[in-house]
Length: 185
Ligand code: ADP
Ligand code: 5GP
Image (cartoon, rainbow, N blue to C red; front, side, top):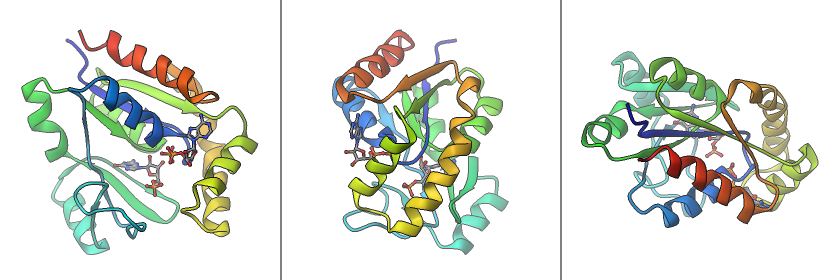
C-alpha cells in the first residue's frame, strides 16, 4: 500500500515547522494535521489553525473517548493527533503530514506501520539551543526544559528509517522533499 501519512519528528527548535512550511509549498497536495494541545497559544497562534487549543478537561475527555491516534505529555503539557484529522484524508487518499514529538511518533509507528517517519536532527546541541533562543517563543526555563527533553529524543534517532540533519535549511528541505516525493507515487 502506498504510504500517505508522513510523520516529521525531532526535538523542539530543530526546524520541523520551518521545513514543513517549505515542504507544503513544494508539494501542494499535502495537508497538515492540526494537533490538539493543552499549551497556551503563543502570540499570533490561531485556534484550529496552529493547534486545537483545549483545556485539560477537554483534552482528557477526548482521550477517554478514544479520539486520539496518539497523544503524549511534553514539557508539562499534553499534545495529540485527533483521529478526525486523519481519517477522511486517508480514506480520500490525501497525503497528511504530522509534526509530532518522539513518543507520539512511536505510537503512530505501532498503529500505522505504513506511515513514513522522518527524524529531523540538529547539527549539534549548541545549534539547537541557539535556534530555540533565537526563535524567541520560550523563556529561559522553558528553553532548558526543551533541551533536556531533546537530549533524550536524540537518542531515538536509530529507530527511524529516515534521518535528515537540518544544518543548511535548503539542503535539508531538498532531502525531506525527496523522501516525501518518492513515497507519494
Ligand atoms: P520546530 O518546529 O522543530 O520547533 P522551528 O521550525 O520553529 O522548529 O525552528 C526553530 C528556529 O530555528 C526558527 O527560528 C527557525 O527560523 C530556525 N531554523 C530552522 N531551520 C534552521 C536552519 N537550518 N538553520 C538555522 N536556523 C534554522
Ligand atoms: P510546541 O509547544 O513547540 O508547539 O510543541 C512542542 C512539541 O510537541 C514539539 O516537539 C511538537 O512537535 C510536539 N507536538 C505537536 N503536536 C503534537 C501532537 O499532536 N502529538 C505529539 N505527540 N506531539 C506533538
